[in-house]
Length: 428
Image: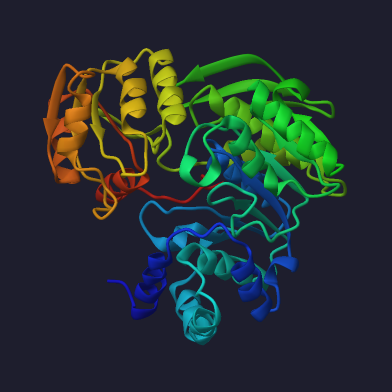
């Protein structure tokens, strides 16, 4: 059961999403600017930013006390804020809200109160500072330029893959979206780009030049050979201008190779970090990114993936096809701000059988009947089961391979039902 303080925090969602740093800066200043008390890496992108943040966190924690800030969570709010190997304690969340609720309400009277995400971001920064974090790996929430995480001055910024999402807030072209993501580039600090699309490269190159920021193109400045891919991970040799690494990861998918290259190049570009080759290799091997192309059951085979936009659905479809697995029964639930039509077209490449359901976020969920209407010309077999757990168990009982996707809130509900751990690392 949620405490009153957590209910208050979630109640701040009524403010919606505000792409505006003024209130975040003001709130941070009230808390003595905690973002200035640790060093950081900042990761933006439409897809791949979470796993890239996790790779950087796991590499850094081999040598330093390190925080990780990501969103949203799969099962419990505390997953968003991790320091070393522990999630933020319930008692810290309680004391933070107790202490700062008057400040939040004061800001509300003067202008507007901080949103849920703005408050959570400052809570993370204050927690990292209080824990004497030396570094933090910080994932952008939405966009970059005006995202509330963007009050840090990172050692390096990373932009992963950019696609069409949140067009109402970030613009309708890849150029405008790249401009917003590129807002995390800081003067004189390295920027690592994983995307190869010409309009993205052109936009980020221009921004990096204006800010005198060294630009690293991960697809150009790192090479991969001896790549071995399967449904449980990959191994390959990664050659950078500084070193050659023998990489092993349990995160499957060809796209993870580029995310790993970006993470390694980012760490290499920061002077005086003194992270060894062995620490980088071990950090990558220790990384887990729960709910992303993750096999949670083997007999019958069950994979969950948090893909929720067309580029992610396309990457998921390509990877599953490459693994030569049986045709799955898809269990799909989506939120209303996503491009369901394009998502379903992309995911259709791997299966014609689908059960539509509701993610564990009913206020924002697309009704499964609406998804079925959209999907009737796409899939050969469609079923609607409103309850997500019932939909999952029906698929699991009738198919040798079940794939759950479409929303983190759906994947989180399934992982919780299976009592799956959700920490972003494997134990040493």
